[in-house]
Image 1 (tube, helix red, strand yellow):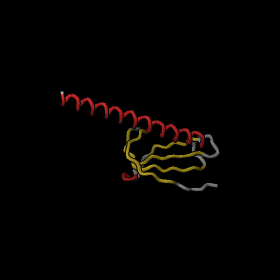
Image 2 (cartoon, one colour):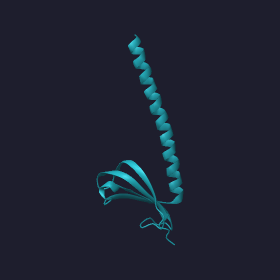
Image 3 (cartoon, helix red, strand yellow):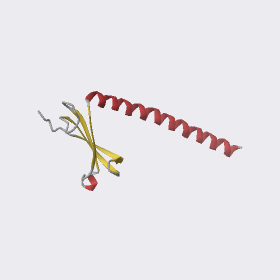
Image 4 (cartoon, helix red, strand yellow):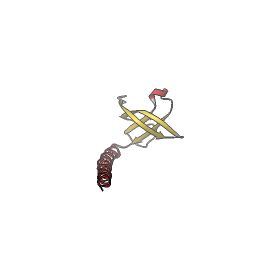
Length: 101
């Protein structure tokens, strides 16, 4: 049974298919895949809805792969944000020290 249930997420970014394109929307669904050799797959279509959604970059992955991807995304965001915050704090401290000296 196909559910045709699609979750939508507003995005800001770019994706590369045939070439780079702006994306503003992701359609996320769990259903029968079109291409992946799986009974069911999590599909994500990245599109530019503001441009009519004519082009897309799509993935179909297993449920376990989707969960691993979510874990990796959250981990990368957490460690990346911490690293960038530490670098920004160090730059601010150096700039403050230079203006005093």
